Image 1 (cartoon, rainbow, N blue to C red):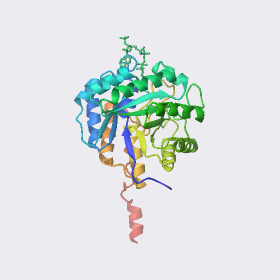
Image 2 (cartoon, rainbow, N blue to C red):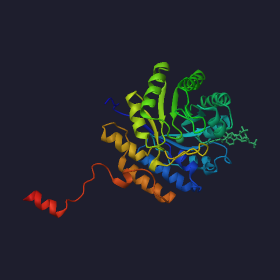
Image 3 (spheres, rainbow, N blue to C red):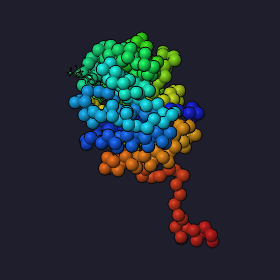
Image 4 (tube, protein in one colour):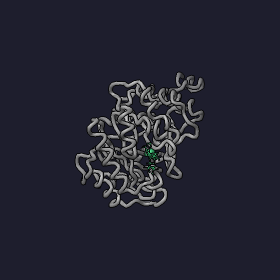
Length: 314
Ligand code: COA
Ligand code: ZN
C-alpha cells in the first residue's frame, strides 16, 4: 500500500462537535478541551465558528473561547466562517486561519447558510479580502462533496465547477467534506484522482463523518491518491445541524492510532489524545463513538489465564 511518511490532522471536535451538542458546553470547558488538544501536539485545531449566534447558539461564545485559550507554538488555531462578517470577527479574535464553507449541492447550501452557491462564493471572495491583509490563511471547505442528504448524488462535474470557482477567486487549500457519511472509498479515490490532476498545487483536505462506518476506509483511499490533510474529531463528536442524519466525524484518537500502526507520522501524542477523549466523554456525559478509548491501543496486553500459562510451561 502506498502511504505518505507524514500527514497533517486538523482537530474539529470543538467546532463540528460542540455545535451539535444538545446542551451548551460552558466556555471554560471548551477552552480546557482546546488546551488539552494543543498539549497533545495537535498541529491544527478548528476551535469554533463565527456564524450567526442565533443559528448556532452552541458556539455563541466564539470570541471568548479564542481569547481564553493558551496558544501553543506549533499549533494553528482556525475557525469556520461563512461570510465576511464572520471573517472580521475571526480576525479580530486572533485566529491563525479561516475555514470557509460552501456546499456542493444548492439545497444543503441554502439550508446551511441561507445562500445560493453563487452567493456563497461571492461571500468567500469577501472573506479572502478580509483575511489577506491580516495575513490569515484561508482554507475552503466544500460540504456535501460526496453526496447530499436532500439531493442524493452530487455529480463530479458539479463538484469540479465549485472547486473551479473557488480556485478562480484565489483558493489554494480546498477541503472536501463528506457531511453525512455518504462517500465510499472507491468514490473518494475517483474524485481525488480527477480533481488532483486538474488543480495542481491545491492543498487538499478530506473531512469525513463516520455515519456509515466508512470514514477510515475513505481516508486510506484518499491517502493512496496523495492527500495528506485530514480533519477528525476528538472522541468522534460531530455533525451538521442543517444536514438531517448527520453524525460524528472520524474519531481523532482512532485515526491517529490507525496511522501510527501503519507507520504514518502525525506528530500527535496518542496517549494525551486518548486522555483528552476521556475528558470530553466526561464533559458531554456520555460514551462517544471512538473505539480506542474502549479497546485500548493494539499494543495492549492481557494477563495469561493460569491454565494456559501452566500448559505453556509444561
Ligand atoms: N456572525 C454574526 N452575525 C452575522 C454573521 C456572522 N458571521 N453573518 C451575518 N450576521 C448577522 C447580520 O449582521 C445581520 O444582523 P442584523 O439583523 O442585526 O442586521 C443578520 O445576521 C442577518 O444577516 P444575513 O447576511 O441576512 O444572514 P442570514 O440570516 O441569511 O444568515 C448566515 C446567514 C450564514 C449568517 C447563517 O445562516 C449562519 O450563521 N449559518 C451558519 C451555519 C453553520 O454554522 N452550519 C454548520 C457548519 S457547516
Ligand atoms: Zn463536518
